[in-house]
Image (cartoon, rainbow, N blue to C red; front, side):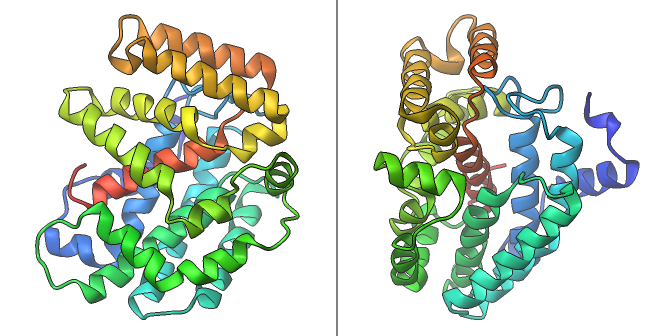
Length: 302
């Protein structure tokens, strides 16, 4: 399967959206939302990815493929714009949460009940809202800094996110995180997404600055995230042993030179095959990679 397998209309829409935007357009809710859609495509198009769906394989998943992800992705385009508009309007967390619930319903309708992007709806949605708030508060005409996005997120919705993190989750990943004493997605959000801003974004920026292609820089970033994230998707599928195996494997990959190392793609492919055999899928790391791609676009690096 490849990108040509998708509809001509979808391909034209994505190609048009990838054309460079004037800086002023990057500050609008429409451009913020468009960057989120493109970031999800960046993540989907990366291969090899251990246990995750790509354009050419299903990873550790029997119920979804790239077509499923593309249907989901296109169903969410309006959501990212709307939640950026809500952030620009100074909406409280209850409004953002309703936007997310409605988006999840649209996703499930598009995928016939399959959860492809629930984590991204939460994470990227909050980030789009934060960008909307930054665009209202910041009068500068230059590119934003990642720290601005994180600061606004915590300042506007940090208390509400902390309260949300104390709820008892009924989702499989949340149940696994609570049972194993891991930091779940809600707590990560309440802290201002430390893995995103302290690990993923610096790793992606460093890889690009060191001359890696965008694909290799994203691969390197994915492994940096896997090495440190309490990924509840891994915990749900493989228990604590599965999570620790994934983290140790990622650290070994990085210690061997990461995506810049000799034979990195072959090594990553071998890891992908190992994850499929173990039925492991680092979905939280994939969401964080997509979010890092979005931050880089919003902050002026495509």
